[in-house]
Length: 209
Image 1 (cartoon, one colour):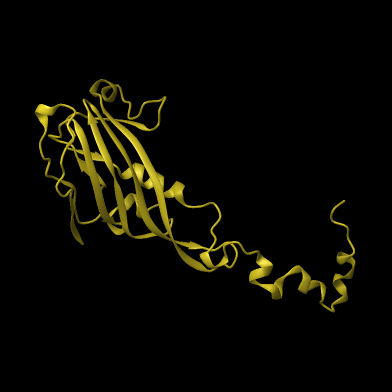
Image 2 (cartoon, one colour):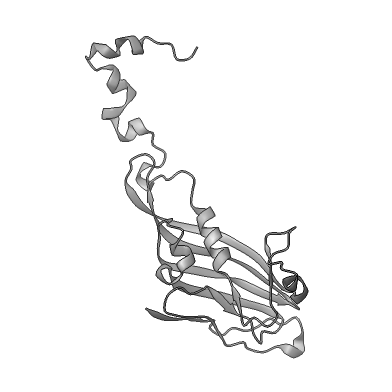
């Protein structure tokens, strides 16, 4: 599958320096084929603030497919990228659907996973040449090459989506309900009505002490 996503329509750059005011008409994501990255083109970008909108299929992003977390369909990324000198500050969110298994019923259901992304990319050749890839004191700051054509958001998107999956997987139709509400035939009250006398000694146990 080949995709060409997405021009930022009418991208009017709010320049920090009035003499640099201009339109920055670029495709922020150009992916062809599979095993691609979620990228923002930064080459030639002047200081200012840019609206970012990216859509890409999960099937084309191997790092997200490999999580085996049930993500499917399109990944949507929206936000703003601010460039100040050698810093690129991205604030936005990512959305993607996931197939999950309900902890109450064991049924499969679909949930929209939405997570915030806040990351600072800093061009710093000296630190890169020393073997660093991130600032040790701030995991939200990523060091990149000045000569890099793109900013790669793939790792940030993957981590945000995985952390955005709720610890408890509850299908919408079971939210706010207990197991006995959903399956009264298997509730403790129903079991106590069973005529099987083998349970009698267990019923008499005081589990509070």
